[in-house]
Image (cartoon, rainbow, N blue to C red; front, side, top):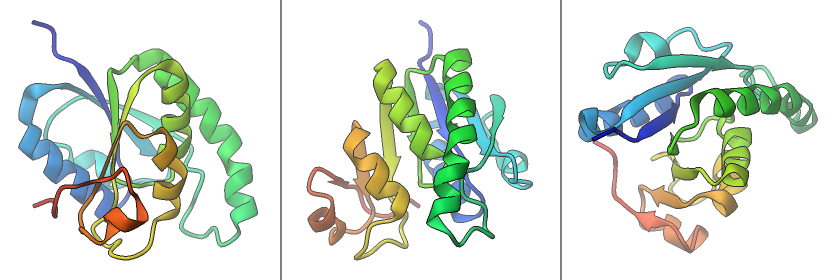
Length: 162
């Protein structure tokens, strides 16, 4: 039996830590490939379940304070996302929140690819910008605090990732 392919979006720091803990639970159930931002120098070394790593331009750098700059950066990121989706042809995309997720999820939805988003555990009362923008195109949307089901009515409360 052929394993389904899961494209996993990694972000720096907490985004990567959360999603890799989830992958530890899933184990080798899937064939994994990964997406990291061009400015991410740490995530690749933390991957335990091996898979091809794709690099795309990050639309939101840590130094970006302007939403207009992020919007402008979304153009090259979307081009990269299109190329990655065309090459990988994943069955699903899994993310825990980096901005890289936004163009990937919207393009994936247009292609009929399943999208799974896990809102960050630090989001107890307010939506993240990425969560707000991918919520409409997420097939599964998980929150780690029950209070967030008021903010995201179709979300599934799953408790904290451990």
